[in-house]
Image (cartoon, helix red, strand yellow):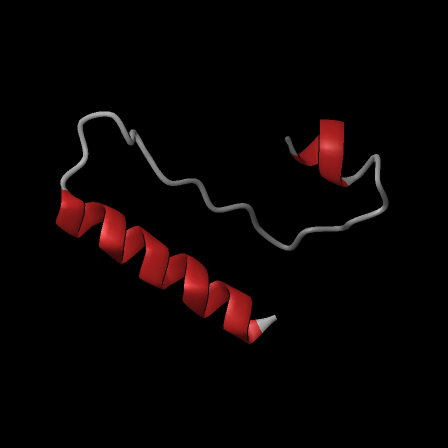
Length: 44
């Protein structure tokens, strides 16, 4: 994703975070992922 989408469109990411696998994750785990993504968004 970094090279194929982000760098092609001019975005230079510092780091890429991935969350998963989603299929077998618990509700609690997904809520933690959402909180982490929210914190990353607030920091930007």
